[in-house]
Length: 255
Image (cartoon, rainbow, N blue to C red; front, top):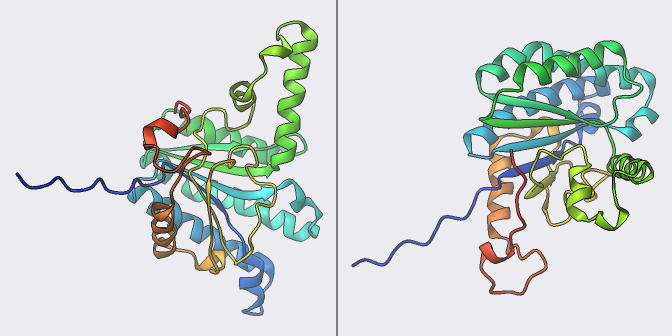
């Protein structure tokens, strides 16, 4: 009998993306930074479609960080406008395509219309299960860990939690991403090589791929190249070389 073919390398179940380079892309064209952010929305549309087509199940993108408030007020408002534009234009299509939308991050301080937009996107896609799109908006990994620690401390003070029972699983369930598996692959565009306070806990064992392309130019070929690089990696999660994958992969979160 012919020898069996080797198993195909796995596609990452969950990809997270730091969408960097909108401003530089616009400046290279002598246009305002807001022009680059608008082009970045088109890159997000392409990426959502390509990821779903490539059998990725979850995509998390860094849309607006807690540090972005330091930018000029006009640019901050432009970023908020893009959130409004993306949801208004794409929500019906996302619903039809079976995409579930989640927004993670700090909601205190957001305007009423943005909060209503977030609630509408999450509510109208809550029953979808084909593909998960998570947008980190007003998000910072350190602030997320502070919120989780505060909630656990409050439970301990109330007598509903024994501090001795706090472990990594309980902390993970206290994070904004409690319903998501940790990302297998984190991609950052623009050539910068840092995490920038993004998914600090969740990316503990993620594979990191840094690409020189600016985010507005990102497309399917770049996503495929990042996935191919991921498939060349040997993911051991701290275990010894030679152990089989089922022996070392952490238990995945439920969908």
